[in-house]
Length: 257
Image (cartoon, rainbow, N blue to C red; front, side, top):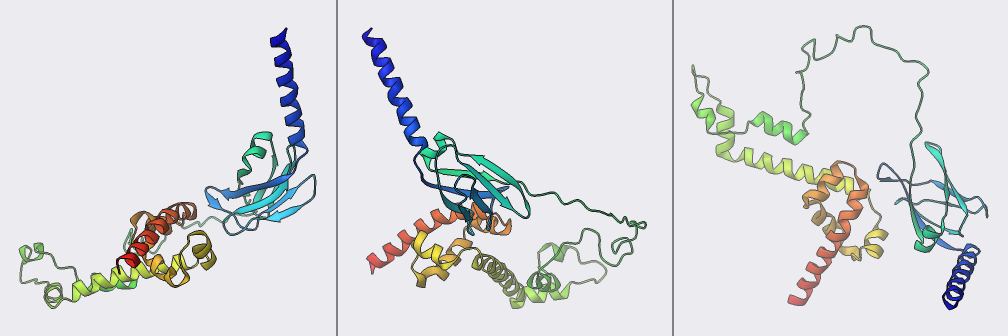
């Protein structure tokens, strides 16, 4: 009898606790993305209170909710989504939402009747041509001298330019220019990725060190790859660890002076 009474007491206590939580509002944080890419400008509306917020450049948002509320996620280029807030998500205080891009139907498709005619088929450009940057084209023109060229001297056909360029250092100079160009390209990508406020307030990078920290980041192979692949989610993940390492190194330099 005593055990039954204890069980009933616990049951009524938990029931009362759940009912009490259902009537309480609190701030819910979330992130909206599509295929791993954060989405900015997504409208999030609480269908119960009619309160609406918009996701920021990192796809994050905050909105007041209670258990049982329904959030509507909408944008021009994405399918609308209705999200029910259950008690577990309410307790955790955060959610992650993935939206599906709208498919665009083409009213008319024009097929090229002479698809066999192309610049490659006409011999205007080589097949499977690799696109090069301006510095890479200069390096290719100069010729990257290798010892095997000396073994292939037949019929007086001497590759003079590559040999001379290797001797006078022009090839090495052009290789260095290619490396610099690639870093400039990555820096240009990074400039538009995060605002100064994110570096200063979130990553704790002093304003005068932001540019140096950016160069520090692009030297990391994984981070550079995420920039090339336009994978902002991976870039955001990696930059936190890079900021921690950078700040520790900066602090050690200050202490050793």
